Length: 358
Image (cartoon, rainbow, N blue to C red; front, side, top):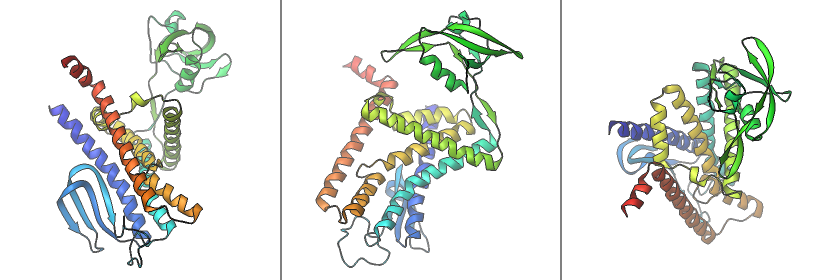
């Protein structure tokens, strides 16, 4: 019970921070564009705490901590309504509206860069060299007399950059004999390795039977910021690849996690220490930002899609089309929520238990 409480608390705090930064991006952009922000709420439902700032914005903490919002003057009003009062979102220029809407997701991406930079300065930048931490005694590596501590320098004469590069080569060559250049105790030699195989999702992939341990290198602030941008870009690229596989190849739907799964992982990672938690928060912040940029009506990306249409077509999207789009977007988000919740419950065994009970 106490463990579950820590998981829920860790999830609520983590998601609260990410949503606060997201909404803070919208708030700061709105103020910069001269739009009045009436309410800044962390959470939904009845307000538990309220504070009215000199700017007129009511800052509040609400009862349901799974989200948040910024209420701007004139948001949601018919934009052909004239005249719009000063400080109204509906009366802002198209470019100002786009800046305000895009600022939330961009704030999440910026937060990831900051978190990664802090992590690289304090705990160090992780890297995984092609160095064996352990060798399965019944594996292809053991059959080739490879040992823990061995480092793969090259395969077939081609240099191996890191463990990820090693995995990529091995998985692409099931049941194949490859020449490994190995570094061991200051010595270098070549060993022929007969790669094993395993079946994953009906596909045969190569298997070596080794694990690697990451190493950490602390960076100075300047290099840490540069590395943080590179790491954020790598996560964005990986996210784009996975989304492409999900949309065009219909792969990965069962791997998606919802609030239950994220809460479980957050609790587990928080127990490992602050450094893994920072890494996870940066990853979740990137995902929150990118998901909000998907051009689905009801998300920030959907509003940007409407503004893009207006900029190109030189006319506003009709209220009927906008309303239909928002309904479709809400239905799609609800469906995704149900699918990810089903996945989470399946991993916990709840679906199998219920099926057995029925």
